[in-house]
Length: 452
Length: 93
Image (cartoon, rainbow over the protein chains, first blue to last red):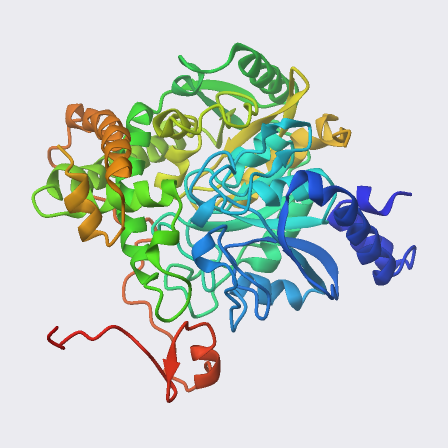
């Protein structure tokens, strides 16, 4: 048995059955970090002592006594005095932080290239990006440098890198998981969530980290339902396929992988129904106004006085978004930009509500691609921010609507992973996980490992 | 059109003249993309600022431990007699 091949559930079982010790477990992963991190650049900081099942934590989560940079030079050397709620909760479950994972600066990016600490490499092809912004978190899981990791998803930053790097990434509903101690990007969108080797692991980690802590007023009444009764098959389940997710811009090879996955879901008993989410095409435009506006407010805290360095240390993408947000909030533009985008957000949210509405024969879940392409070459889109933004078209709508979504391995195109996205109504992670787990159990994609 | 210099000043972002040109070009492209929102019919639509729709969420008013002064000051670049040192706000030059 190769210790680092095991998912979280098997790792817990093996520890319980004394098949190996905690020391052997942490040793096996530390060994792999030593061997592969130099090349992959998944971790920004490593913990000296790992006292528990090794988790990689995106560097936007505060970890007491351990450098937390948010991928930004402005926070180089910042040592948080307290733990984020999700980190604190993991520590009570015998999980230990093995290191802080690389990410796009302040979680702004779709490729990992905006990190102030260098790009993380895709383990399937090191000349490709890993996806972002939770770049190091997906690379660390894909390359077995930790048992699971934590990421944050604001417009797709868990799902999209999970798709490009071939792991499971769950974006919970907005408000399901506390943001306390998470360095904020866009407060009406930020969702912390798990990145794992299997769907059942994502379920386990969500159970551990979700629920109110009294420090996040949006995270209220959000304890997960009992997850012991799961779907055995998809008989009678209605799965919606939005035509807007299969339009121009979707790479044909990715499309054929996703169509194959949909066929599989039908074989497993689901009824496949064509649906429409008519405002999808406006999602990116609305998102970039709302997100940038919230970014410009949130990042005003970096004044170089209480923590961090001066504002000239922000990277280019961060400066772009702060300025775009400042522009859209500025006098004379507020109604034309921010407020209009907030109204379009309502329409996007309604698209989903109507698609899921049981009284009009709505679907149970929606499936589609996560990203229009597989991982692209490092450097390919870095000088064209708009091209980079448009790659988030299939993840951003669910973020605006606050609903849960998952990316899980759905196949390969030219030997690069393709993620299948499953979306469900607000606070129905149970449905997302059930459908994902049935699909995973009936396919072998997740068993493939990158050759390092 | 976006006036980068003005926006940068409002945002307290120091930029050079060369950067000004680059950002003006990139952000103009982004804003003209965003202008497609003008073609959406939003008459009578209420804005969504927050999905959770929670209001007046409070916690019990019970004392609990918080950061010590030393912890709170631990990451500051410049402290004096137990407080942060900032630029003067009301001083005349």
